[in-house]
Length: 573
View (cartoon, rainbow, N blue to C red):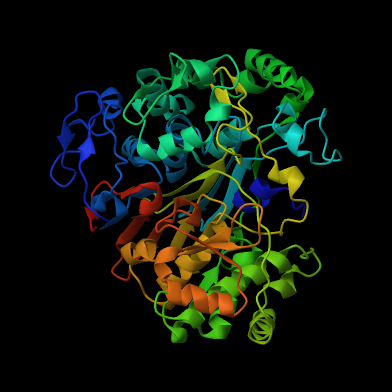
């Protein structure tokens, strides 16, 4: 398996606060008010009214964090993406339709994380057949900047850093394989948000401000939309994205050929070439989406863990890592917030997975995920000091959707870039700067942004996360659910460690673990970089958990101010 095929191989994969209405200055109480933009007719929304309300306030909205009820259930890292998913389900769509609809809204509302100029993946469980498969569209190296050309930091900030985007072909592949709604319907909420504009929340503004050198770097939509009189828009301002709305409208009406072989393709090639890139018309025409062969619980490829089966779409690293938790009897150590031994063990497991994953081959992968190897890894952890490593960085959005029929869609879609990439914006489409594919040539095989635990042949816990801390985040999430029996609210509020700080081998760790625990870890040889509590770079867990009474527990991590909700789900706070 090519270590650079991240999207294809792996993704293919509270405290109450008022919600400011930016244009009117009024506020509403989320505990008592109807959700903004909802109408009395199922399957209809007033998107314009919705776009005027900021639902990502500085203090998380408790009702958005955890919801319990029957299917359907949706959790994403933006409240309006969740609402778009529910809208699609109300109109008779499948979980995949809802996932795609939410993803398109995220391309508008979270342009620092995902883009039509990026990569797309979704893994879907078909309740009728029991089959699990993945559809998507990955990145490809441009003909004019092939994989053989070495990474160069200076060039990476030019068009050279832009990879051939597979996002739209991935949308088409997923819709053809799993969708039910007409293609045109999926675009309605995203186009409405782009046309009507939307309020800039504090999280989006933080990322935009961090990328201020890039977003308005070149003349065109980036500068025109995000700056006013030469100054960057601020929190509470409304940003309109008319060029993106127009491009999405053409894609709605003409399909992906508009992007890859039609008028947009020439604009993309010329826009990237103007800034030093090498994407060609042939590169775009050759891009194809994919659908993986299906897997069922009775097939080979799963791995055992505490009475669950870890589905192969979770990736080899999670399949091994959770078995190491069991071999170590992690639950006997107590939760990491109370046990330095448990925290040390989880950090060490993450280190070993990342470092050993670079050596996986088709010939050894069965042994890699075997219980015997899990026991060997645990013994190595007990007998050897920590092994820090230098990680990578990528921006992403994560979604998990369950429809009323029990179909599940989960995964991530991504710019895989620093926010706004290199600043190239083609008709509203932010081009990626997926430099990790060229810069990090020894990435582990089989790391994933999603984790699927099965019981009795069906999903029992499904999680997805954005952020560079994807591996660490989901490992800790699974441990909190399974090893310690936490409910979803406890899982996402628990302190967390993350991926190494960019450029150095020190793992980030939320400071509310406490100075004493951090000092003890450092005394054991850990290289750590303490950060503020509830930091978004620790990952953002989005999960659906099947409870013993048959209800679903949806969870959205407050670190990104996401939202979990079902049509009839009760908010649990």
